[in-house]
Length: 176
Image (cartoon, rainbow, N blue to C red):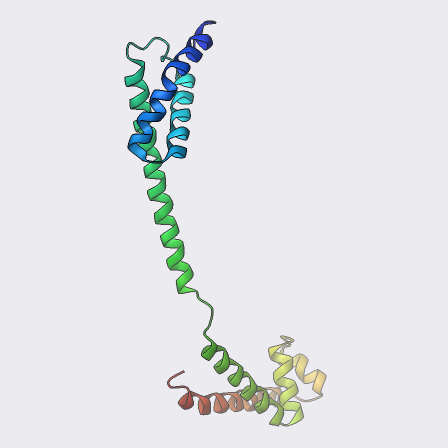
């Protein structure tokens, strides 16, 4: 915009052509709200850029600007739709477990818990100290008052018990 008379001239052109542009867009878009938004955006773009007041054919300039805005909006919608589709695919790949999968996990957890409870006390304690407390073999040995070698044997015993129990469940669940 260049000059003090620009705003009144622009307001006059807006009053003269806004209704026409909105109707023209409505015929193309078949949506009153989109037509109103794009008509408004077309005038804003031309107000910022300047030149509408001096254009020989203001309707042609408005129609061209509005057409470009429609194309821009369509491109944005395509990008948004592609993004939403990609997001939906990603979410579908990370679905919640089925009721059957939950039941299998609960059964496996119960079986492992039972296996640990059936271990000798120090073997079960060593396993839990290692797994849940993250204790080193040395620290477990000090806590249980046994050698590191005994801790390794206890852990091997616990892991073998868990493995055996889970291996027994696998045939019942197919190849899980």
